[in-house]
Image 1 (tube, rainbow, N blue to C red):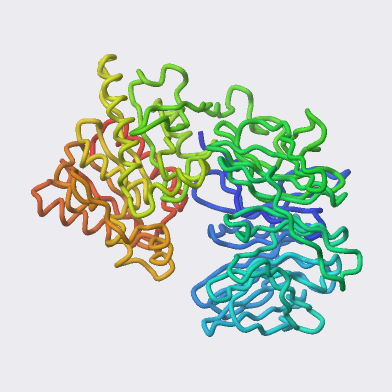
Image 2 (image 1 turned 90 degrees about the vertical axis):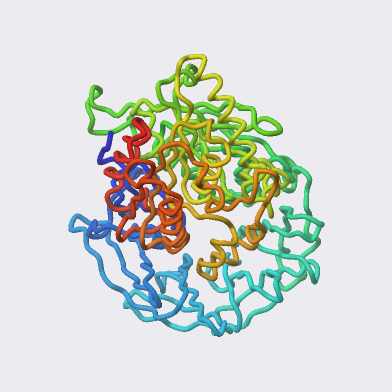
Length: 605
């Protein structure tokens, strides 16, 4: 089932003129390489490998250039290496420069006298803005006190740039004049609000804004006057784009400057809509069931946007949102070009079902067809997070499991994103509470249904937060499962915060992980309850994991041994040398997938 065709594409970037795109692509073997896509009319549209073909890291930043080349920023501790990747037969690559700073980010530059704009951050904190020249020079544009992010051009020639400034715990958009190196306030709706510019039409002046000035996070718009020296009017926050049960993401402004492509994430599926601010309309466009990529570019040739579905590996789609039936998926004329019909991988389809959780229905992605409940093997797969969700998109690991005859159920239990703010907030300060109740309710129902078919209960599988939740479920509802697989688990919110890096501590605290949930089942601390696990257990951790330290799994192994459990009989701990938090997508991924699949099929540790 492994092919040379890419199965996943991530980190999409579009050139400033919209003529090219770039991404990282993998065939599922753990290696990532750079692709350049030509989007110009009259040229073949599809992926072209660029550079030497040497594997890239997952966090390499890419910047597509108008001529098809790609500027890559490879992040190393304390420094960043910039390289120019060529789309030629030789597969050449040229080192541009090295920047020694803690943080660096590239922005597309609309001018022709530089490759990119770069924002460099140090610990003072301050932000330096450079133009990255073709010959490797970094020409300083401005030295700004404080931390700045974002980056939206306010004019077509690259003279004024909107940046997000963190100020007194608030985010405000300011305008940087590259000619004078001065910064002026740009969005200041109230003193206490977070005001960010998301999209701008540099010619027509349409601005799309996110702000909590109306009392909650809302999308708004404003059109700048023709005389840009005049003050703009009032920002409007229309109800038509306030969709409480969906995450609304503005993607791109049409060339006419009147329409905005908007991604609506409702549950596990994405939809595309066209918002016409001045007419107050939001009209959904016809797209297949699946997930859109939250980035895009709209030119005279149409809208380009990444797309994936459970049985459709990631590609770049194009459409005219106003024309039904215009949807096309570029670069993939058949399921897998180069394969004979008999040899093509047959990707397993998935569907959505509502399963009964602790207090109500839980939307779940299911592989295995209509009779999945009576399959020989059923797996309950728990997503990471907690602020995350399973998406209706291609997943190489879930496809591998489905191809091995394992029916996969991937629930979006309470706390998952995409189901409204209230649903997501249920986990704040209650990790392992409402979500565990949903998971155990589904597991117990499945165990009863499968017993009627003479089948064993479902297996449990989770990664990161999902691994933590799987270990809790195996401990607190031991009769509902046949085995448990945990990849990169942690032991409790407080234990993770005590050991993790400063950024991870801040994120976990913001998500309410510093509070340990306790009820009549006991504390949600894996070490306090793991002795109740009564099924075969396999847990896996990369020893270079900088998100969840490997010490979390080592402590679990030590505790299990201290409680009399036998490694190799009751459980097995597999530590992966040289791998980080993305172990399932790292080097040797197919071999690791095969090992995990064998455990889920047999339960042998």
